[in-house]
Image 1 (cartoon, rainbow, N blue to C red):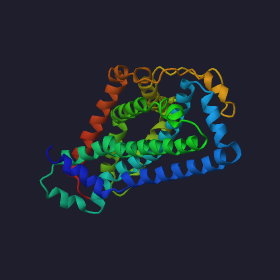
Image 2: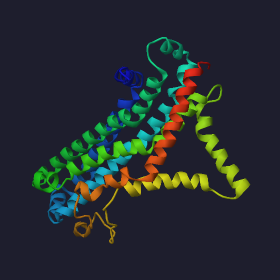
Image 3: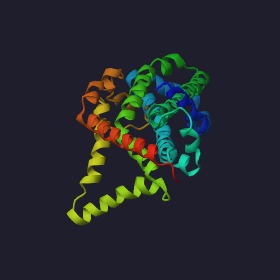
Image 4: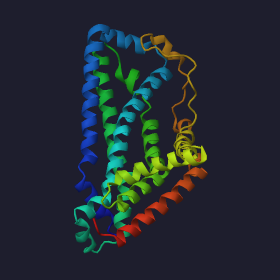
Length: 311
């Protein structure tokens, strides 16, 4: 496994989308936020109204608004992240056979196991870390822009924005989410790699997507059930229900135009212990069952790469 660091660098060199995509998303979000601030706060609402409104909101309410903004930013990155990982895995083992690169790499002192594992680690941790960096930088820039408008309105950005901002909790949740999501999604990572290794003349997309769809329709026609898709849906749902804990539902609809309503936010504690439950994740039977399935798929992908170099 001594070649893994070099192989991980190789994946990054060959796929600039890993870091280009987060930069593009960062630029779009910041430009959009800056335009919204200039048009809204700087125009119709006014800087003084922004400061006055924040001053009338209790600190938990301000923390709740900031945290919700952080979630919105992270969600935007996450949507793109899913597509980047999806297409990377589909192409990971297929393109090297199609373009005959596999002949070169098989001549190098690098085992098939190391090669496939490098792609697993890239999809599971390396790509998410690039996007995590993009999310974190975007949040900091967003806070800095907001600070400027608060200062223009005569307020204290330190008291109204930076102190209530749950930066530590948000940072910890993001790292926790990267690790747990990578492990929890291992069966899907393994399946996409297996589809990439199986595909010969047919595109990997045919195996990765159309085969499960065929199974769903076949089950429904033969047995009249939808257990396959329900199992997959429950697996996703179990992750979110297990990983995120302690956030109470809001009993009142929040209207941003009415600052006093923000004081009714029920989230009073943004500590890590209140927002995540690592023990529940680690001890979840679903996590371990999924990891076993993922390892089986990855093992099959390694086997196919070892004995198939045709396109």
